[in-house]
Length: 74
Image 1 (cartoon, rainbow, N blue to C red):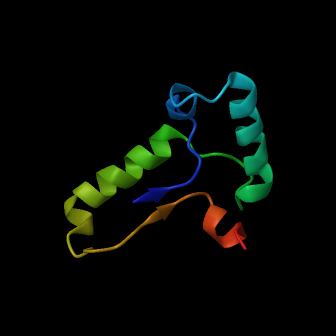
Image 2: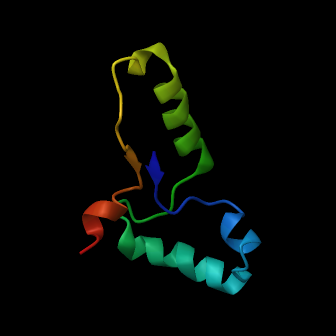
């Protein structure tokens, strides 16, 4: 799975200041087709699906869970 910007503490734990983090979240309005960052729950639901029998025939895929960030990138 390949998530886009997801609202978590990971960026700040890696050294990003609160101001930088808020700027990153603001940038998603332009860099993500959905115009917002993702939520943990959205990623968790995707993981639950992939772990379920409903995804039993899915193998070797990179699933983008990025709110359209990839389609917006040059």
